[in-house]
Amino acid sequence: MRWMGLFLCVVGLAQSRPELLTWQSRYPQRMTMSEAGKRAEHAFTRAAFSNIVTTDQGRVTANTGNLDAVIFCHEGTHGVMFDLALTASHAHLEEAKRTLNYLSDLLDTQASDSTGRPVGQKLWTDRSRYQPFERILVYFEEIPEFGGHAWITVVPASARPGDYQQWFQTEGKTRGQFEFRGLDVGTYEVRLHSKSGDREVRLRHAFAVGGSAAVTPETPRVLDSGIVVRTEKQVYTVNEQIAVTFQGLPADTDDEWITVVPYDAAAGAYKQWFYTNQKKSGTLDFHGLPAGEYEVRYYRSFDDKQTRAAYRFTVRAN
Image 1 (cartoon, one colour):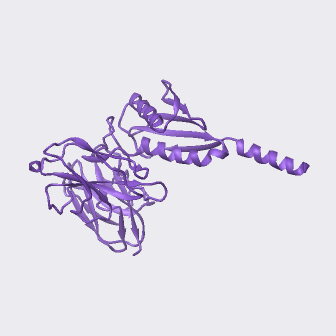
Image 2 (spheres, one colour; image 1 turned 90 degrees about the horizontal axis):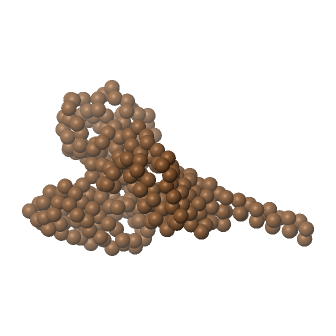
Image 3 (cartoon, one colour; image 1 turned 135 degrees about the vertical axis):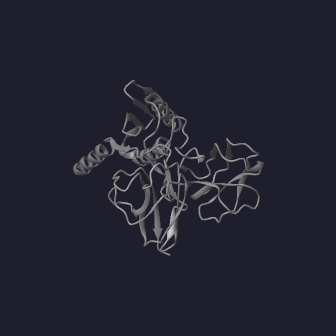
């Protein structure tokens, strides 16, 4: 009995010892430090934290009954970045993991400007991942009027162009927002069409519903402001042709180029590649690939070793 009591005491101490979880943002945010602090406060508020305190050193602290957290805002080369640390007892570790995942989505969903609008995007959602059946806010700005007949729908990412489920007409507005009903676990797209019966997707934006059960959609990594490259789909099958779209290019030299390489390839590496021919926007068709994780990358010149914009995608076996 004495040994059993000691064992239970040790287990109790192990379970009460604080666990530390950390996370660092991937996408630089184009905003001031003051605006970054407000985003951190907003994230804590959305996650039901209390006792939110902000210091002038870019440090925001908060807590719940079970969790303590701090967000550090700091200026990087291309914008503001966030570091998040969260502590909890072993008994509340799963809650801490879910909360860390939720906060990271709120802080780092897009490469954005100070208003939260994703850089280079005209159609977007307020988050990249939602809980099942949580309402979805869709924003649009600077879209064509299309004679007042344009409409926006949310559909599974695998849906054919022109398919629709929930939808709203823009009624000639070039900016605004719509609230869509929540959805079951899965990967989805917001799509803009020009008129009824339109089978061409004019603009699209991917997002996911669910935690680890859902595929988290990638967002373009934007290092040079306003430049975006991405594939038309996030997941392709083996040897399926890959369409890459680009927009916002400077188009001021004749040796800007785009390549598709394995995701972990070094900066400047290339396989299939095309010059953009001094176009600011357009589409390039790449040959299909074996199964794996890949990235589309844009470079200003052939001697450029810094990736200026990138987008990750997946090729899966049939």
